[in-house]
Length: 218
Image (cartoon, rainbow, N blue to C red):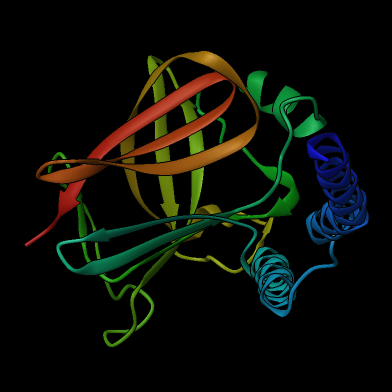
C-alpha cells in the first residue's frame, strides 16, 4: 500500500513538472522577444532630436563655417573660418610666404572676427564698433610673415572671399608667437584659450602654431 502511494505521488509530481515546462519555455521566449523589441516612443523621440540637432549643425556650418566662440567679461567674441586642409594649395602657398607677404584663403571665405568688446593685445587695441558705433567690431584676419616672425592683420572688410583682401582696409596689426605644432593640424584650426585675466587666440595649421594673448580693453 505504501509503495502504491509513493508511486502515485511520483507520477503526480512528474505530471506537474511536465506541465510547467511549456510555461517556462514561453516565459523564456517572451524574455528573449523583449530584449529585441523595436524602439520605444522615447527612443524614437531621442533619435528625432539628434537628427534635428544634426540639421541645425549643418545649417550653422553652411552659414558660418567653423566657429570659435568666447565670452570675455560678459561680452561675446566669435571667429568664423573656412575648412582649409594642410594638404592643399592654400597651405603650400602659406608655407612659401616671403617676409612682408600676407596669407590668402583662396579656397574659402576670409577668417572673420565679430567682437562685442574692444581687445587689447599687449597694449595694441582692436577697437569695438569699427563698422558702426552701435555695432560690434567686425574684421577679417590675415597672418603676415615678417622679417623676424609673424603678425596678425585685422582688416576692416570682413565679409569677403579669402582672396579679396584690400590692403587699404588694414586697421591693426599685432604680433603672433610662432612655434612648431605639437601635433600637425590636418586643417586650419582656430580657438580661444581662456587664461586670466583674458584669453589667448590660437591658430594651428599643418606644422605651425600661432598664439596671441589679449584681454578686454577699457
